[in-house]
Image (cartoon, rainbow, N blue to C red):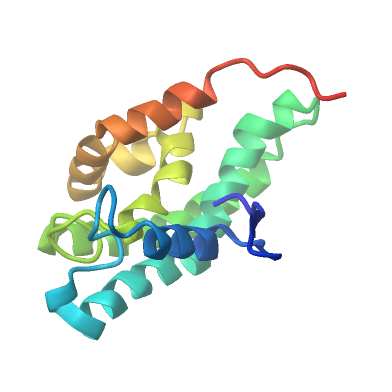
Length: 173
């Protein structure tokens, strides 16, 4: 996920996953109330979600973002794509996605059978891989991962996010 800053009550959070957790806690009475787990699942349910959020941050994000940067953002910045970086990170990511494939064969979503923040944090880079680069096969060639992506990427809230990203922004001054 991209690092951003969210100002709150005289202090700032500067890490996307922390901001997501804060928003989930702060607005738990609205929207999807189970993003951080169901109350009846207690600490074990929350820990299951946290382990997959950690997996995204430590294992999935670094190679997926490196691939997306090289194939999408570097050309937009007038920089040459470093295919050695792409290939190296595709190999790293393939190992992570093999673990994900197995997990998603055992459950509908990463942390169980309900959509949670663990799924949500994986969506931005998966969107880049599946829709903005020529690496969609990393996702679509894995049956369970492809099924997961097909399910989560059609959620109305996600469609709105993708739509908002395609709206031209005025130039910064």
